Image (cartoon, rainbow, N blue to C red):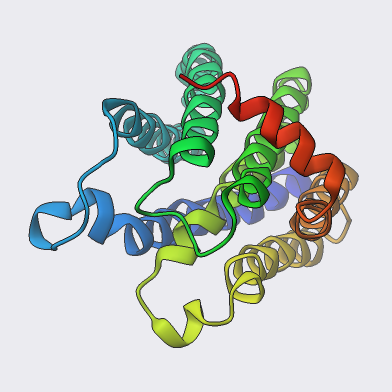
Length: 242
């Protein structure tokens, strides 16, 4: 049993180290022109100070994920657990600030918004926040089951990849629309799931259900964003934006 557990840990470590390298690179590729390296490109200024706060919070979440992977790899479990309490506060701020920015962008417009009617598109960022809240809450509830906990935390990062993927400045890929910016995160999530399954010779059910949940929301939002019910609700939401 001890040998099997060691093999599982090594397999997990490789997967999460790979994610801690690949996912931040995707985020950098997507947001370099409009945020991280903005000074080198002639891109529109940030709409409000709140957008900058949002950028800082999302960057902090990526850094936190990398840090937690490093702490687990070096077996600094106590430090990892203490830092986890900080993650709760950051997660709450991400949801609150993200919600306010999304609603304001739907009402007043945004330079970085795609060529989609604003009320329809509002469902996209709000679903991202909903997914994040569900996945992170589940991860916290299952924090004593480390195998489930860390896989759910991995999915919180996959959940936030579409905005970065959509901004990668390759016109031929951007022209694919949802097939590209939802397709790549879907592909990466499925690859992680399959690699995890093969290396551990068993399917982690929480990882499976979390991945299927995430992928399903990529599709469902594209369907419901065109419904009258959503447009009425979105209209009511933005009526409260100042």
